[in-house]
Length: 121
Image 1 (cartoon, rainbow, N blue to C red):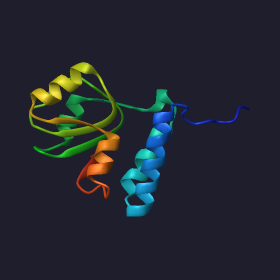
Image 2: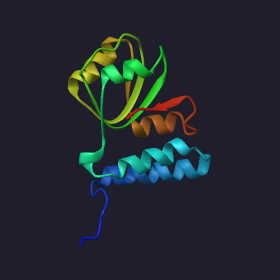
Image 3: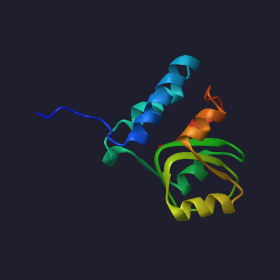
């Protein structure tokens, strides 16, 4: 049986290391959970549609997605969305709704404690 190697993408490995360090340093379970989910195989990572983000958020909330954000559905309120990747149409729709698009690393730097961040996906 082959040995599981985890992600081979160097940028993702760096992000995982940062998430684990901040999670332990700040005692923020959300970053440890995010690292655990991002370590999964690509086929098992979250793919979240905008309709799902719209359903589970309120105006001005912050969402972290351990995977990809897709453009299906619509967003009717401004939301800050951080994810590993976004489809081009999803980025356009988030910005058109008055929200903002962040990388997970940017969110980690802005909010090291993970307070008021919802994990979707």
